[in-house]
Length: 113
Image 1 (cartoon, one colour):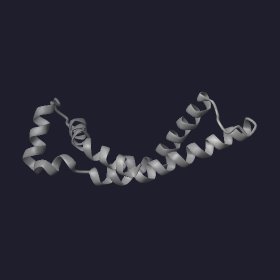
Image 2: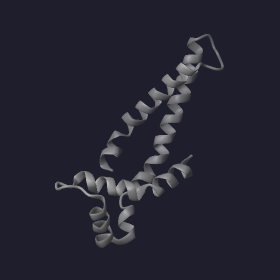
Image 3: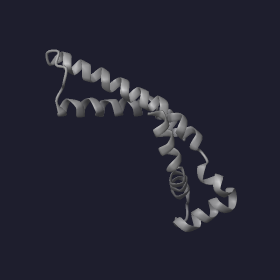
Image 4: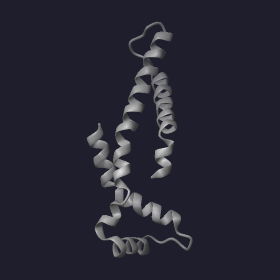
């Protein structure tokens, strides 16, 4: 799970970098001038600035989400009478809560990046 997440973060790093540049511009934001500015200032590696932190976030994000999801899934199964397979609504609830917990626990890392 870590390798796939790291690969996807790296593949989308240029778009993330462009997004950040466009978000902080105080003048009229245009894509091509922003791309040219990144290229002129830092070259190809400029599009991957900040990617190391994004890749480092993958492991704890995945670990927290999987752990909380499995814990909630088991707890819901126990509440429903020790069911080994919970329903779709319960899975959706467990996944939503796992995602919320993941974001809550890693919010400071998201703000830094």
